[in-house]
Length: 249
Image (cartoon, rainbow, N blue to C red; front, side):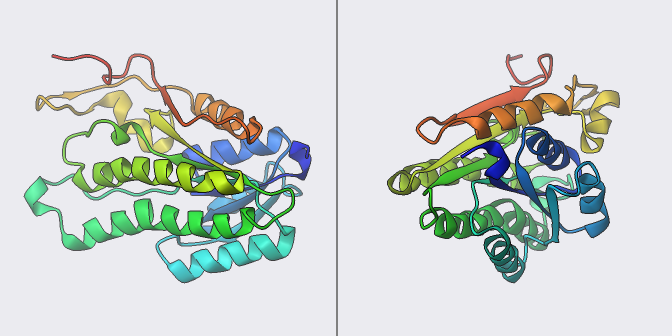
Protein backbone atom coordinates (compact mmCIF):
# COMPACT_ATOMS: atom_id res chain seq x y z
CA UNK A 1 0.00 0.00 0.00
CA UNK A 2 1.46 3.38 -1.00
CA UNK A 3 1.40 6.35 1.37
CA UNK A 4 -1.19 8.03 -0.87
CA UNK A 5 -3.63 5.27 0.08
CA UNK A 6 -2.93 5.48 3.80
CA UNK A 7 -5.07 7.25 6.39
CA UNK A 8 -3.66 9.07 9.40
CA UNK A 9 -5.44 10.63 12.35
CA UNK A 10 -3.73 13.40 14.32
CA UNK A 11 -5.16 14.74 17.57
CA UNK A 12 -4.31 18.25 18.67
CA UNK A 13 -3.90 19.14 14.99
CA UNK A 14 -4.97 22.77 15.25
CA UNK A 15 -1.61 24.20 16.24
CA UNK A 16 2.02 23.58 17.11
CA UNK A 17 3.41 20.09 16.85
CA UNK A 18 0.11 18.58 15.72
CA UNK A 19 -0.25 21.05 12.86
CA UNK A 20 3.36 20.64 11.73
CA UNK A 21 3.14 16.84 11.80
CA UNK A 22 -0.23 16.71 10.01
CA UNK A 23 1.05 18.96 7.24
CA UNK A 24 4.27 16.95 6.93
CA UNK A 25 2.27 13.72 6.61
CA UNK A 26 0.24 15.25 3.80
CA UNK A 27 3.44 16.33 2.05
CA UNK A 28 4.63 12.73 2.37
CA UNK A 29 1.45 11.58 0.60
CA UNK A 30 -0.86 10.63 3.45
CA UNK A 31 -4.50 11.54 3.82
CA UNK A 32 -4.98 13.06 7.26
CA UNK A 33 -7.93 13.45 9.62
CA UNK A 34 -7.47 16.50 11.85
CA UNK A 35 -8.93 16.37 15.36
CA UNK A 36 -8.97 19.20 17.88
CA UNK A 37 -11.34 21.42 19.84
CA UNK A 38 -11.24 24.50 17.59
CA UNK A 39 -12.71 24.18 14.10
CA UNK A 40 -11.16 27.43 12.89
CA UNK A 41 -7.67 26.32 13.92
CA UNK A 42 -8.15 22.92 12.24
CA UNK A 43 -9.29 24.63 9.06
CA UNK A 44 -6.14 26.75 9.09
CA UNK A 45 -4.12 23.54 9.26
CA UNK A 46 -6.16 22.02 6.43
CA UNK A 47 -5.74 25.06 4.20
CA UNK A 48 -2.41 23.63 3.03
CA UNK A 49 -4.14 20.72 1.28
CA UNK A 50 -7.93 20.76 1.75
CA UNK A 51 -8.36 17.86 -0.67
CA UNK A 52 -6.22 15.60 1.52
CA UNK A 53 -7.28 16.73 4.98
CA UNK A 54 -10.57 16.29 6.80
CA UNK A 55 -11.51 18.46 9.78
CA UNK A 56 -13.33 16.76 12.67
CA UNK A 57 -13.71 19.07 15.69
CA UNK A 58 -13.26 16.89 18.78
CA UNK A 59 -12.72 17.50 22.48
CA UNK A 60 -10.72 14.41 23.43
CA UNK A 61 -11.69 14.91 27.08
CA UNK A 62 -15.18 13.73 26.05
CA UNK A 63 -15.37 9.95 25.40
CA UNK A 64 -18.52 10.35 23.29
CA UNK A 65 -16.75 12.79 20.98
CA UNK A 66 -13.85 10.35 20.64
CA UNK A 67 -16.31 7.62 19.62
CA UNK A 68 -17.89 9.93 17.06
CA UNK A 69 -14.44 10.81 15.67
CA UNK A 70 -13.50 7.20 15.03
CA UNK A 71 -16.94 6.37 13.68
CA UNK A 72 -16.44 9.12 11.12
CA UNK A 73 -12.98 7.84 10.19
CA UNK A 74 -14.31 4.32 9.69
CA UNK A 75 -17.39 5.38 7.72
CA UNK A 76 -15.43 7.74 5.48
CA UNK A 77 -12.30 5.66 4.78
CA UNK A 78 -13.01 2.15 6.04
CA UNK A 79 -9.54 1.93 7.57
CA UNK A 80 -6.92 3.70 9.70
CA UNK A 81 -3.18 3.26 9.21
CA UNK A 82 -1.72 5.76 11.68
CA UNK A 83 -2.89 7.33 14.92
CA UNK A 84 -0.78 10.13 16.41
CA UNK A 85 -1.91 10.69 20.00
CA UNK A 86 -0.64 14.24 20.24
CA UNK A 87 -3.26 16.35 22.06
CA UNK A 88 -2.18 17.46 25.50
CA UNK A 89 -2.72 20.02 28.21
CA UNK A 90 -1.17 21.14 31.48
CA UNK A 91 -2.23 22.51 34.85
CA UNK A 92 -1.34 25.98 36.17
CA UNK A 93 2.28 26.04 37.51
CA UNK A 94 1.39 26.36 41.18
CA UNK A 95 3.10 24.78 44.21
CA UNK A 96 2.52 21.02 44.43
CA UNK A 97 0.18 21.23 47.40
CA UNK A 98 -2.01 23.79 45.60
CA UNK A 99 -2.76 21.75 42.46
CA UNK A 100 -6.55 21.45 42.41
CA UNK A 101 -8.26 18.12 41.93
CA UNK A 102 -10.19 19.62 39.00
CA UNK A 103 -6.98 20.59 37.20
CA UNK A 104 -5.43 17.20 37.96
CA UNK A 105 -8.43 15.35 36.52
CA UNK A 106 -8.54 17.55 33.41
CA UNK A 107 -4.88 16.81 32.65
CA UNK A 108 -5.40 13.07 33.22
CA UNK A 109 -8.50 13.10 30.99
CA UNK A 110 -6.71 14.79 28.08
CA UNK A 111 -3.18 13.42 28.39
CA UNK A 112 -3.82 9.83 29.46
CA UNK A 113 -7.44 8.72 29.28
CA UNK A 114 -7.93 10.19 25.80
CA UNK A 115 -4.90 8.41 24.27
CA UNK A 116 -6.08 5.18 25.92
CA UNK A 117 -9.56 5.52 24.43
CA UNK A 118 -8.23 6.59 21.02
CA UNK A 119 -5.91 3.59 21.04
CA UNK A 120 -8.79 1.25 21.86
CA UNK A 121 -10.78 2.59 18.92
CA UNK A 122 -7.75 2.35 16.65
CA UNK A 123 -7.20 -1.28 17.71
CA UNK A 124 -10.77 -2.17 16.77
CA UNK A 125 -10.31 -0.75 13.28
CA UNK A 126 -6.73 -1.88 12.64
CA UNK A 127 -7.12 -5.51 13.73
CA UNK A 128 -10.05 -6.13 11.40
CA UNK A 129 -9.03 -4.18 8.29
CA UNK A 130 -7.39 -5.57 5.17
CA UNK A 131 -4.43 -5.29 4.97
CA UNK A 132 -4.43 -5.79 8.72
CA UNK A 133 -2.57 -3.69 11.23
CA UNK A 134 -1.39 -0.12 11.62
CA UNK A 135 0.79 2.16 13.69
CA UNK A 136 0.15 4.23 16.82
CA UNK A 137 2.57 6.95 17.90
CA UNK A 138 2.25 8.64 21.29
CA UNK A 139 3.61 12.09 22.10
CA UNK A 140 5.42 11.45 25.35
CA UNK A 141 7.42 14.68 25.75
CA UNK A 142 10.74 15.13 27.53
CA UNK A 143 8.53 15.14 30.63
CA UNK A 144 8.18 11.38 30.17
CA UNK A 145 11.79 11.29 31.45
CA UNK A 146 12.22 14.23 33.85
CA UNK A 147 9.93 16.90 35.35
CA UNK A 148 10.01 20.64 35.16
CA UNK A 149 9.26 22.56 38.35
CA UNK A 150 5.58 22.68 39.30
CA UNK A 151 4.41 20.18 36.65
CA UNK A 152 3.19 17.24 38.74
CA UNK A 153 0.02 16.57 36.74
CA UNK A 154 1.61 16.92 33.30
CA UNK A 155 4.73 14.94 34.20
CA UNK A 156 2.75 12.15 35.84
CA UNK A 157 0.61 11.66 32.74
CA UNK A 158 3.62 11.70 30.42
CA UNK A 159 5.37 9.06 32.52
CA UNK A 160 2.14 7.05 32.29
CA UNK A 161 2.13 7.41 28.51
CA UNK A 162 5.33 5.38 28.44
CA UNK A 163 3.48 2.53 30.16
CA UNK A 164 0.64 2.86 27.69
CA UNK A 165 3.12 2.79 24.80
CA UNK A 166 4.77 -0.38 26.06
CA UNK A 167 1.47 -2.16 26.71
CA UNK A 168 0.07 -1.11 23.34
CA UNK A 169 3.21 -2.30 21.59
CA UNK A 170 3.02 -5.67 23.32
CA UNK A 171 -0.72 -6.24 22.95
CA UNK A 172 -0.67 -5.05 19.35
CA UNK A 173 1.83 -7.65 18.17
CA UNK A 174 -0.85 -10.25 17.52
CA UNK A 175 -2.64 -7.88 15.12
CA UNK A 176 0.35 -6.28 13.32
CA UNK A 177 -0.20 -3.06 15.26
CA UNK A 178 3.06 -1.26 16.01
CA UNK A 179 3.30 1.40 18.71
CA UNK A 180 6.09 3.86 19.41
CA UNK A 181 6.65 7.05 21.38
CA UNK A 182 8.22 10.34 20.39
CA UNK A 183 9.58 12.44 23.25
CA UNK A 184 9.94 16.07 22.23
CA UNK A 185 12.01 18.75 23.92
CA UNK A 186 11.66 22.48 23.26
CA UNK A 187 10.10 22.53 19.80
CA UNK A 188 9.78 26.09 18.51
CA UNK A 189 6.00 26.49 18.67
CA UNK A 190 3.93 29.33 20.14
CA UNK A 191 3.67 27.31 23.35
CA UNK A 192 7.47 27.30 23.65
CA UNK A 193 7.87 31.04 23.10
CA UNK A 194 8.56 31.80 26.80
CA UNK A 195 11.60 29.52 26.67
CA UNK A 196 13.44 32.06 24.56
CA UNK A 197 13.16 34.71 27.28
CA UNK A 198 13.27 32.60 30.42
CA UNK A 199 11.51 29.74 32.21
CA UNK A 200 11.84 28.41 35.79
CA UNK A 201 14.76 26.07 36.47
CA UNK A 202 15.06 23.43 39.22
CA UNK A 203 17.53 25.59 41.19
CA UNK A 204 14.97 28.37 41.51
CA UNK A 205 16.39 30.64 38.83
CA UNK A 206 14.74 31.73 35.59
CA UNK A 207 16.77 31.20 32.44
CA UNK A 208 16.27 31.10 28.65
CA UNK A 209 16.48 27.71 26.94
CA UNK A 210 17.42 26.66 23.43
CA UNK A 211 14.60 25.67 21.08
CA UNK A 212 14.56 23.83 17.76
CA UNK A 213 12.55 24.21 14.58
CA UNK A 214 9.32 22.23 14.86
CA UNK A 215 10.12 20.83 11.39
CA UNK A 216 12.63 18.52 13.07
CA UNK A 217 9.76 16.95 15.02
CA UNK A 218 7.57 16.62 11.93
CA UNK A 219 10.39 14.99 9.97
CA UNK A 220 10.96 12.51 12.81
CA UNK A 221 7.27 11.66 13.01
CA UNK A 222 7.07 11.08 9.26
CA UNK A 223 10.09 8.77 9.46
CA UNK A 224 8.49 6.72 12.24
CA UNK A 225 5.24 6.55 10.26
CA UNK A 226 7.00 5.52 7.04
CA UNK A 227 8.45 2.27 8.35
CA UNK A 228 6.96 -1.07 7.30
CA UNK A 229 4.99 -2.68 10.10
CA UNK A 230 7.71 -5.28 10.58
CA UNK A 231 9.89 -2.47 11.97
CA UNK A 232 9.22 0.01 14.77
CA UNK A 233 10.84 2.98 16.45
CA UNK A 234 9.91 2.09 20.02
CA UNK A 235 11.17 5.33 21.57
CA UNK A 236 12.66 8.41 19.96
CA UNK A 237 13.81 11.59 21.68
CA UNK A 238 13.97 14.71 19.51
CA UNK A 239 15.19 17.76 21.39
CA UNK A 240 16.93 21.08 21.07
CA UNK A 241 20.61 20.16 21.26
CA UNK A 242 21.49 22.78 23.87
CA UNK A 243 18.45 22.52 26.11
CA UNK A 244 19.17 21.63 29.77
CA UNK A 245 18.17 17.98 29.67
CA UNK A 246 21.46 16.04 29.51
CA UNK A 247 23.84 16.82 32.35
CA UNK A 248 23.96 17.52 36.08
CA UNK A 249 24.85 20.32 38.43
